[in-house]
Length: 289
Ligand SMILES: O=C(O)CCC(=O)C(=O)O
Image 1 (cartoon, rainbow, N blue to C red):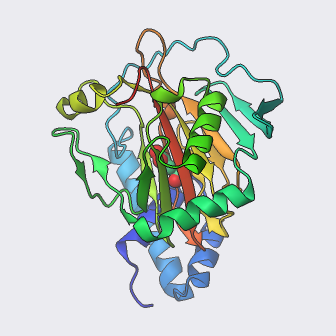
Image 2 (image 1 turned 45 degrees about the horizontal axis):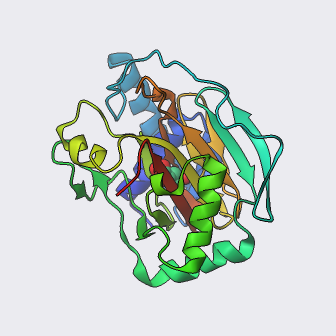
């Protein structure tokens, strides 16, 4: 390849921002069949651009932070021991984070259940969209380059069993859960950092909030091991979760005062080798219709 496509430029920018070394970036690009010299020159010029940009606008971010900074953390998040047992299925608690409230779980789904979800989704994938803050409609955007599909709650006995397990794990009534979303990212695919909650100041949020109130928490389940990249990142606190088949990252961002936790800002970093499959469950304050 003798030209760097825009998704790779974004990948370089993101990783330069995260402090990944120049050598690691060049190695990954050479592995993806870019020439060594082209990779090195592009990384050097993006690094320079970033230094110039941050000198000119030290607070520049790609997404406007529209929520108050002071978030009051309630309790200690989910009330779990080191293991969770749900209907004969054993889930391990691997890591807990206080700000934002987050828990990494192991074995949320068995490998066989992960494979089944992928097989059920493969023929139904459509390019994913993002919510337009003005209209509330979904639109395609270069910040989200996955494809995906949804399963309405309880659509088959298998999906119903998973919905039930996830509701128990997230400690909410099943009726508060949105349909399970399955996403596939190919090489270079990513979801740049964003909030999962609906921005209260955005006109387009009203129609989403009318269907069950604000989102309160997210569970992202990894359906495969990813050969390179594809971490779920929380850039405001430097957390990076490497996808491992069957494990899941839970995080919550709404409290009883309806405050929203801006530390929940997160994204899916570009896949640099192989592909990535995830299942996402979002839950609402009230029954989701
Ligand atoms: O792909 C990931 O790891 C993150 C997905 C995500 O941010 C989301 O579904 O809201």
